[in-house]
Amino acid sequence: MKLEKDQIFNADCLSVLKKMPKNCVNLIVTSPPYADNRKSTYEGISVESYVKWFKPISKELLRVLKPKGSFVLNIKERVIDGERGTYVIELILEMRKQGWLWTEEYMWHKKNSYPGKWPNRFRDGWERCLHFTKEKGFNMYQDEVKVPTGDWASSRLKNLSKTDRIRDESKVKSGFGKKIENWIGRDTVYPDNVLHFATVCENKGHSATFPSELPEWFIKLFSKKGDIVLDPFLGSGTTAIVAKTLERHYVGMELNKTYYKLAKENISKFVPTKIKKRKVKGKEILSNERNIK
Ligand SMILES: C[S@@+](CC[C@H](N)C(=O)[O-])C[C@H]1O[C@@H](n2cnc3c(N)ncnc32)[C@H](O)[C@@H]1O
Image (tube, rainbow, N blue to C red; front, side, top):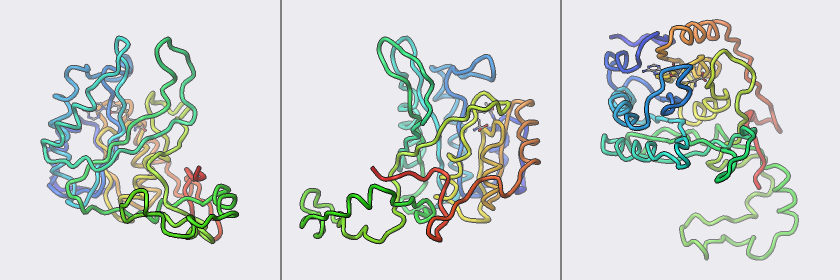
């Protein structure tokens, strides 16, 4: 199969992936169906069979991803019978056996997590964004996700101590010490691995959409203009729309006919200026900007 850019399929992702050439996409960003979740709205996969179900898919994803590409998997194990499931952890171990490197784990902090009270736990306020790669040296454009230094820096930098002014390597001995003085005059800094986005509340015709800021952040970080971004569980088309907005190409698969049609419609309505970009002191910043605490 010749890979056409900007294409979506109404099909099981595994069957399409098998036909795709190897090493053809730069980035994969996706949120698969969670085990046993939302059974009434789309095909839920049982907890017991989740890893077995996902493994052939991750094997194909490994094949179609370019050597310097990244795979970002947004997932979270749910609670069953009062206990957290372990299938995501099991999946990570299996994927490592397939040849994936589990390079990093980003945390999506859901700023508006679902309210509620349980006898043995608090509200679930975060989800995993697992970052897998094929090689240790992968494409990462860190400057694209810098965040404004914010109020923290101005108050923290007002009274610098003597230790602030020397390179503080004494505690960690890592060679990557922080010299706080270096922050003076900086408008932007590198973020940490916790992303703060609100969940999507308005009805988008799909019960499990992720906020567009989530694929936006990873697409900026792990791809450049003209690259191909794949979402094998496309849902309402969020990843494809963001990819297009950021001048990347997209490929997507969606099994459910209604969601496929919705994604097609949403993509056709795509307006390049929809994602807001702001300029702070001449530097374009992301919609998820936050202050360093
Ligand atoms: C969590 S949702 C993705 C939502 C998406 N990120 C969005 O913002 O709209 C997962 C989607 O995967 C689809 N799906 C489930 N199994 C699939 C398969 N084998 N191949 C392709 N799509 C599948 C479901 O119909 C569902 O729409």
